Structure formats: C-alpha cells, structure tokens
Amino acid sequence: AQTVTQSQPEMSVQEAETVTLSCTYDTSESDYYLFWYKQPPSRQMILVIRQEAYKQQNATENRFSVNFQKAAKSFSLKISDSQLGDAAMYFCAYRTTQGGSEKLVFGKGMKLTVNP
Amino acid sequence: KAGVTQTPRYLIKTRGQQVTLSCSPISGHRSVSWYQQTPGQGLQFLFEYFSETQRNKGNFPGRFSGRQFSNSRSEMNVSTLELGDSALYLCASSLDRATEAFFGQGTRLTVV
Image (cartoon, rainbow over all chains, first blue to last red):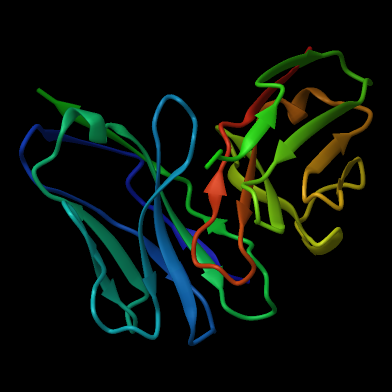
C-alpha cells in the first residue's frame, strides 16, 4: 500500500519570503500522480499543484513549484513570495494511475503560518 | 460552473442514530469519492463511486455505506453512530481518469 509522510506538522514564514514544505512517499508503482492541496479555514481543499511521475520536469504554478525526486520518493513544495493568504493546512497526496481509481492517499498535513 | 456541493454543512447527532450526507458533484463529473478527516487520523479514504458502482473502498466498518444515483449525486450513510465518527466528511468529484479532484466544503458531523 502507498503511504505519504509529512514530517513537519507546522511551519511559519515571513510575508514575502520563501518556504519549502517537505513530503516523502512510498510506492512500488512506477507511474502515479502527486499533488499538493491547500485547506484554508473555510475547509475546502484546493489543488495547489500536481506532478505526473513520468514527467521529469518539475511542475510550476506561479509562486508555487515542486522539487520532485523520483528515486528518493520526495516531493517538496516551494512557496515563493509568501502571502498572508497562503496561511493554511497543506496536504501532500498520492494517486495511482492503475485500475481507474480516483482514490487519494494523503499525508497528515502541515500547518503553515504566514507572519506579516 | 457550480462546484461540489455538500449538504448539510453541519450536523449534530446522538450516539446510536444514523445519518445521511449528500454530495452533488460538478456537472459532468461521474466519479465521487468520500473522505473522513479527523485531527488524529487525518484524511482517510472512505469509498469511491463511478457511474453508480462502488469502484474502491477504504478500511472502514460496514456501518459506513454509500451510493450514487444516475445523476451522479452521491450519499453516504453512517448507521449506529459512535462518538469516534465525529469528523469532517469531504466529498470530491472528478472526471474519470482525470488528474484533478475537486472538493466540496465538507459536512461537519458531531456525535454526542
């Protein structure tokens, strides 16, 4: 079974600075998807960024980028120019490409605080 | 385009009762998944439905069940509620084999 580990339960960053959130996972599959989701106090999970395992190029979405190390099974999220609105819980998630399942396996999450 | 809608937003039930939660997916999405979120266990997968068929099931007792209707709307039911069932229940919808799941705002269930 696949597992996702987020070892840092909380982090804080100063507004406008850069922060990196770490995530490791375990799988025997060669093709899969990885995601970072954000959950603000409103509770709605919002997709931040996704990475397809067969793509070597790291995904980027505006101020958000990932460092995907397939061999090390590591998938970290870098937030540049942090904004107050980035404060939220962040979840790393894994999804298989096999069997047509949409099931997501989540890490425990990390609370990000952005200080003005 | 309307997002994923979950009703009700909040619910308080007594131990031993049963509860039904509803999820309306984004129009055109045929896959609906349910997750339980608690402070202790985090986000755990309950089950997934696609075209009215359960496609995948998590490791939860039989008290947790679900179904999907022909319009893709889904319900989940929890019978004989226990205090430990208190949680945020999240529903997500997606196109089949899509790379993104869209979540609703969840139903906060409190069992007293």
